Length: 111
Length: 325
Image 1 (spheres, rainbow over the protein chains, first blue to last red):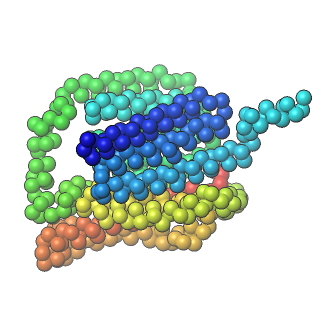
Image 2 (image 1 turned 90 degrees about the vertical axis):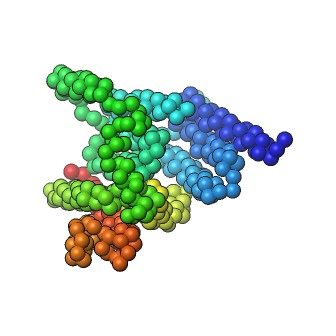
Image 3 (image 1 turned 135 degrees about the horizontal axis):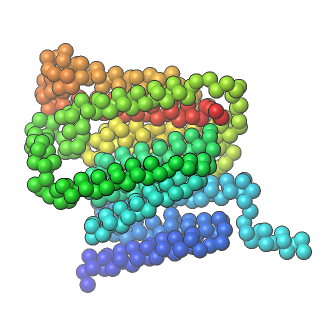
């Protein structure tokens, strides 16, 4: 087994895993009951998903300038994605939109 | 594979367009139009038009979305109920669509090398660029030098649009302006976006400069760089408050940038005449014609970038300064 073959297999695994995470994230964003759980699912698509996919592409690109650019893109995504999720969640809380399980808890207490 | 991807993107594009038309919530429509631009940018990239893709992503998905949102903040985010007389509109649209579909039958096949557009002047551009201008990115050579008049016209379109929006929005609103905290303070109380935004803003400006000066070698140039630079400042304005952004780049500078960029472009053209060449003929700018072309393209791209940045930032500030009509 040559090194290139092993690299191909590893990058195939990374790309598939990343694709699976993005798919699950999309599915969760469609199926989850309220905004916060949907965001929880969707945030997978901008953290672990792109990390695995870009990792896979870097293995394909090798030690080139393209890899450096890919790492820069990954860093940018890892910084902005969670920040956007945080901003969205706090904006939603500020607008008085409470998580569904918290509403269920208060209803239990009042009974 | 590319073909399947193109079909997928174009189908998504049509679905997004229909969703934009049908949705009543204008906020969602703005988000959808951002998605539309991103899909379009991906499509351009598939067609190997990296320069256009970069412009579409920076202007269509980035800056337009921000400007639309600022406009929505002043008006309302619900679309008015449509008027009852939609029959004529339907007929006009259907007729136009049928005419366009009929016109497509005369189009050459996709990627056909015998198509008129590949036979007319394009081969001359490709051959001449190497000898006369000697930069790797032919798109920049065509935009900046061969068709410098067109680009000059585009810069003046941006200039005129900026002046027009400023005239419309800076008219007195009748009511005394209410200074809300959100506008003057920005998001200063929200720690996470603020920390990350402050961290990223310098890198966005660096990237804008890269796009500006890398236009000779790869996709890039003044239009895209101007949009990215304006995005960095708008990010700063959103995080730190509009007042601080205006302290960093005052309104008077912005007006100067709008006029100055267009003037720089025209001045380069006039310099060509004064040095004994034609208008926008950069070859006479230096002893070596090829070096002259490099200087000319660098200067006019700088002019484009300055004007675009000034116009976009002025429009943003004009929107942000008005709370309600």
